[in-house]
Image (cartoon, rainbow over all chains, first blue to last red; front, side, top):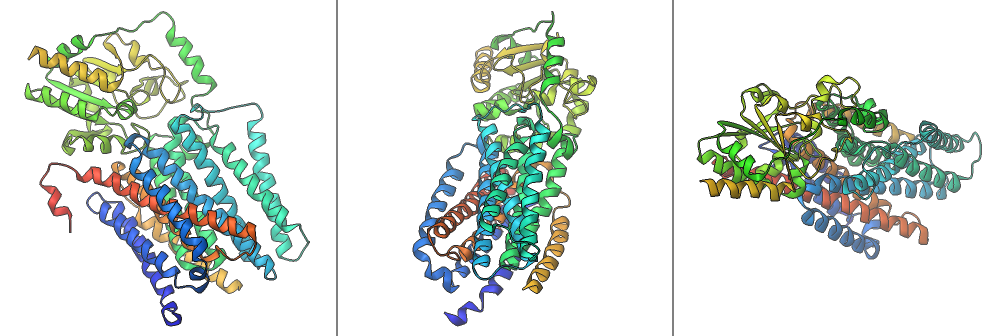
Length: 472
Length: 103
């Protein structure tokens, strides 16, 4: 046992290397799965190696049941969740990691103070691990609640919001500084009390940070919180003197930050704008009232839609979150097959943030065996909309809203959109006229070229499929 | 003691650089799986949780340690399984490219 223990740091080193390769692999389509599995194997090795440490092996009565419970929750959650709920699942797993980092930091602080006090450097790392971890924990839970529909997804705004958020942040920082001063021997603070307050304020700050952010921005927020948790883990690693934790946490922190920036760039918004700009709040209601006046929309039946599609030469399908919710991908595939059998060209236009996460639509359509080469990115296909006979919008809303191009007062102004409005005919499958996730109206629906086919995406598409089969 | 923190700070600096290098160009299709995979990797906090689980004697320490291990495990297991499931869907295509993928 004693000799084996000497290998532990080496196994940690190997694990850290697998994480680097894992991340590298995950950033390419052909290597992604291998990368993920390599990192998982490294993680397993690291966990097993940790059991060679005496204090861990001795605590098996406590630790093994905890691992068993966590494994069951994590495994069942990850297996059972429908593809549509993937984003909130990632949020919740991320929150768990943040919470763990906060708890590890807390335990390390209490241990060190019991053993005669920690150095200033250690205390700073501990406090950062606690604060960032706790913010990530509560923020992720709010993000989960918003995506799951447990909390109103709209941006939650109230008077004096900045003051409250700033106050929480300031108070947290002040108490943290107090504890640092205490560690430096400048003054004597009530350690446990101050630490508990720092944790509570950090939790409250995480809630205050995410509540005012609209549901459409949640992917970016989750990515950011993911980077936060990485940082928290790195700080916890610094506090307990474990290099592997530092490497793994920092890797995620750094790559997560880049990923967050890539994602906000895809929506043409700066990160600051996502975090502090009101999206879908008061000004949106104003624009809505303006366009609603007088103009009406045109409703079409499944039969009309089938005829329109049947006589087209080129059809572009624009999938969105509605397709994901209704699990309509297989029906859409069936529709596309029928149309292609008639010699009609069918393509899919994928907006970078269609659905609730980048790549969400690609995953769903791949599940329904839609050939990869029929999926087109926004830049590739936007020019072609004007030559398309029919643009079939299935449960996509904000990413097709022409207001983003024209209306400078619109909250989504400047976001790149799919040029659906340039198609000869537009069919929009949607459950009702209700505005989308950003909470703003879409004037595309009022366009005379647009026919609205109301219904759940799956059911509406299969109605159209039936009509097409009848006609054939 | 503070030497260890300093060494850790060096590792931190270098890892930032590596993290930046590794994720330079990522197709937007892979953003979600990459985020999810990175999410699983920070689940390494489970090792930290194991190491300090019994650091603090008494009921408070035991409860906190237990919770830390549970949360860390959820992060690791859920993270990797959900990522694998996402990537499975990219692979499941009736194209000849499939068999070549299993190295």
